[in-house]
Length: 302
Image (cartoon, rainbow, N blue to C red):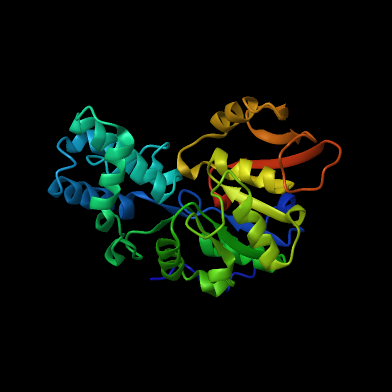
């Protein structure tokens, strides 16, 4: 069963989000939960690496990737949830190196590890189905509301394109105008991953809008920082990926070019200084409005 059904004319965005020309969504933790599809995938990877002699302590391997096989859940800092496939492979390589305890150089071990495990990382189609991809709320309602407001929608993710396009197919995102050109992925050529703004800027360019006319929606600090660096004046932070608004606020307080102007439990408004490395035109201090909410459902005016 596909998630997307476009006929939701009654759904509207909250007033704070009106007027945008493009709304860009992160994928994992924002549109979909990862546990049911990527949990079994980590198990398959562990078995494949064990067969190749790289994993002797399976529980430690799961821990390194932030996965609890008993609960079938990922930690909020898991590279599987918030990183790219390169990040996952790097975490796996470091854990395999620790277990090998060879005393050699890590770089040499890593090169051999990546070479010998090249066929172990593919995500099988049977793990990306309507049964395993659990939406983080009313995906269809939110996307439909964006379109009803006159805004186009897009996806910016650190995941690989093959997996992302399969997820888009299962969710029926084409129904909302999201095709290959409306998706920016971590393995796209000449695109630096978030928190760099490359993916957001490319999506804006493709849609023919300025970053100042776009909204970035995500569940991580890297999503929000990418939006700020791109020059998006409005951000939506969702807690569906495991991180809380309070944790996000702590992250922002540690960035020297950002001053939190309103910190009453939620990071509603952030002041961006002119020294911020952003794609936006240089100028005086800008205000970046951030709405924090439990999930994308909070974007709907119900």
